[in-house]
Image 1 (cartoon, rainbow, N blue to C red):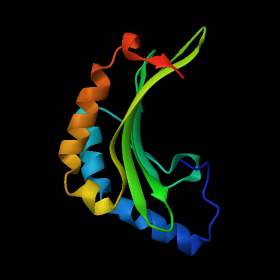
Image 2: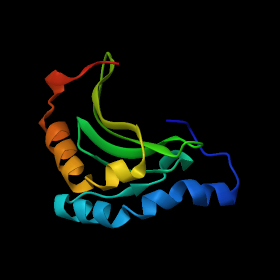
Image 3: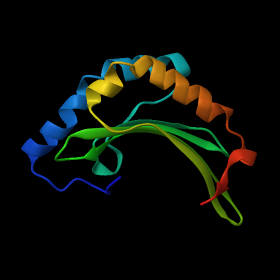
Image 4: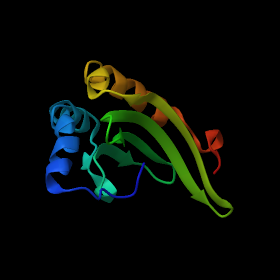
Length: 127
């Protein structure tokens, strides 16, 4: 995921508009699981949930390609240890239209949550 958007305001509106269509479902999921819905972190079009300690879990939908307007849905678990960061990740959807995500969003979020919360410290590998 790129680190920051550098386009004009009109371009920002174009690339973030698809996320507004899934915000309601994301808010509902956040409410059901006691999570905070994060938006556009690092100045990049995305929606995410981040929770947990010492193993931190992440579910994120982010803009993969500005020109093609494709999106990625992934999950990740990380833990910082004395010997460095350890992690595990899985892509549920990669470089797809927002429609491909939104059509099955509740199921995808349930799958992502179930999987990432099932990962333990022992499942993580050195980054």
